[in-house]
Amino acid sequence: MREYDINLIPNDVLESETLILRARSWLLIAAGVLMVLFVINMTIKIMNNYVSKEMSALSSASEKFSREMMQTRDIRLKEQELLDIRKKIGFLSQKGPVMRIFSSIDKAINHNITLTHIEIRSQYPNALTVKESGGKDNTIVIHGMAQSNSDVATMLLELSKNEFYESVNLRYSRLGDSEQGRSVIFEMECSLKNLN
Figure 1 (cartoon, rainbow, N blue to C red):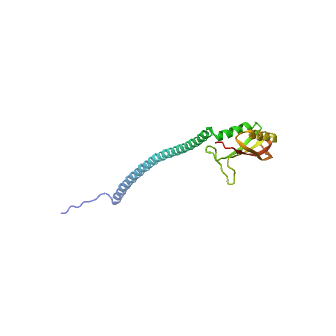
Figure 2: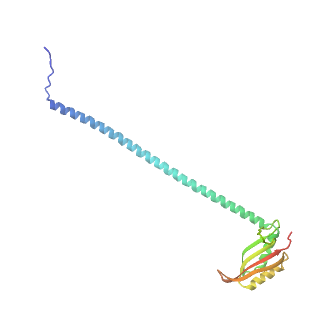
Figure 3: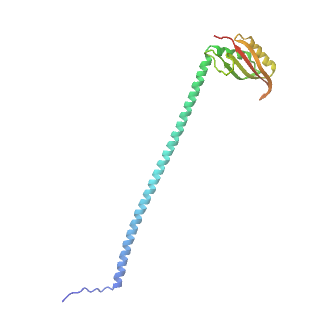
């Protein structure tokens, strides 16, 4: 005689138990997936914060480096300007025609005269050389403002007495306006003797 297994548990109870076991399995899998996603998300956030701080530090360092480079460039430009000024001062401090010319002009002007421009055209080696087409060599052109025509005449007379000039001519003299009010605007041309 053959033995048979007899299931005394109703079929619907077995199905509900199976469903409960499957649901628990899916819940555990879902919880595991959610935990993994949460860990990945937190890791990404931490990495983003770290990268963000590093980027900020690099950006700050880059800006600092850029500022320092600009300061270095500005310092070099100022150093070059100072070297140029030093060369000019060294040139002007040498004895020679230029210093004698400036000295003679300084003695000729008084406190009522303001010089606006001096142009020296010379063939001598240690004079400031400015040449214009059609202009005369070895001349000084002086532009300025004076309070009156008598101040201009006094300056003209003082320069004419100087031994460095062959001739001193007033090119023009006219009334004009300045910050101090009405003034006489003038231009003189002085022809230099051979200063060598």
